[in-house]
Image (cartoon, rainbow, N blue to C red):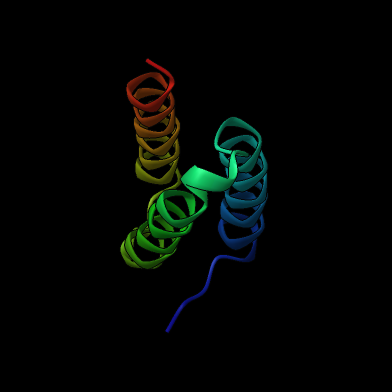
Length: 75
């Protein structure tokens, strides 16, 4: 297998930053289980993505889902 070290580092940085933002958005105790589910699915799907562009799109989608969950439960 041919591993691209730069892509792995960039994906890891995106994963950490997205995880921090999701944790900040969904910091209420009531949303803790939803936050865990979102981050687990993000990790599982992110492992299957080989392109940096697709991983960035996945990260944006995760952030969008987190904002939608926050808006749904804040009303």
